[in-house]
Image (cartoon, rainbow, N blue to C red; front, side, top):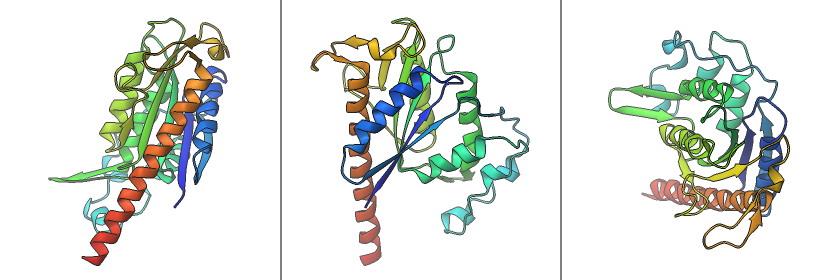
Length: 238
């Protein structure tokens, strides 16, 4: 049983997010049976959701609960941009780590648009609901230009996205970094210079922490997949 982990650099520019997400993927790849994929939204077109294609994005939920569903919702949008291919990459993965810059204290517009467009993978009718992302594991990394520049709010927004999609968010440390990793980078491609001591951890650089985090997300994803597999086998036997 292999684990597919996607690393998404959610910055409109090539820089710190790409550097740190690649470090996280290196750490994840150290775990047995884990394959990694890197993806960036830099220079990609992700148009904002217009909220005009509800029926097109959300076919009857019975089709999905009964196993007749098709991955078509996110390809039916009125926009013809790069969002469907990014959403498909997430759908194909078992786990995802998003590294986001901090823009005015929160996630950038491109990532917010992508999150809004991910509504197309949720299906609901009455008390029934289904998400193509459910049971996937998610990790969050935020990089800001000031030590207290909005990193925690950015992390919370990403974690809220995970929970809204019925995913399983993973924090770095239970007390000091429950939402994920927060880094400081005052200049472009300078995140590797951020070195700090977390309570209970040795002093380490941002790349070292990113590799540890990638490894943790991969390990949690492996445990979740084993549990899902065991549950499926149990249902089959029963």
